[in-house]
Image: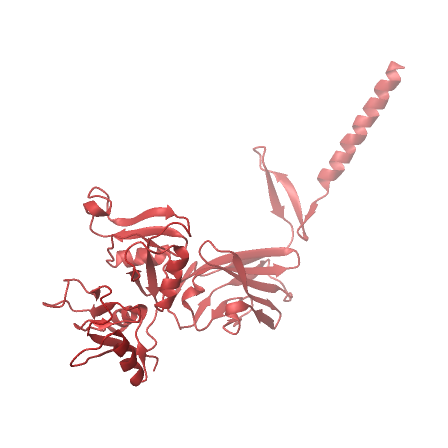
Length: 363
């Protein structure tokens, strides 16, 4: 009886071993293609591809552009080994703003393309050559910055690559009429938009710091962090022992915490000009004076753009749309304020005071 049990146990073990060998000899089916498990010689396992592999690539990981212009986000796909006949693939582009959800931009299947939301009518695939899935974006807006994902889908095979889009321009600190540190994140974003600009990204603030921006007040950025740029270390701004750079408070509560804002203006599509008056205008008269000339009172972002992109230089302080009094200087000189170029501010005076005004026309 004991010998019989041992024989049955031996036969059962041999059957298990045979089944195991059959499993190991059969390649696994994964993602629509066959793979083999092969040892590397060090006890680990690697997956080797037995069929055609799909590759998705980009020539640039970051693209820089200006608001109002068109740009191309490069994306290419290929097969290895190359195919003898083209396949019907699906291309999907998505976009993610700083710390935001991923949103659909465009989906294409063959010659059919469909765009979504704010991108509708502004995007299409370039498709100049076989294997190209590059995205063309027209009439770039300030809020188009972020990370774009190019996803190519062939059956169950799915590969993607990301491209960051950044707008270049001028970054400026902004305080509302109420004074320093009055804005939560949502207020800061709205304040920038009201001044024809958008909350700057960290990369944009870093580029501005490299170009000399020095500001000791902390401000919101597009990702919900609070930071400020220092080129000259000093006691009130983190101390003399800290090296110059971007000082960071990290992520802050978007509703409870209050700071200033760092805004970005990325183009000069219209024309900003100074309208003088022998007796000056109060704020209400300034609004009306611009309107009589077929224009509107300039916003802060528009004045910064005129200073940055076209070199507007005027030693006269004038009203702006937010009720502030500012003037742009590209050539510092005596009796024109600080010794550095910039848009200089007198803050928010009484709206009964008499001054000139900066007007803006889109033509």
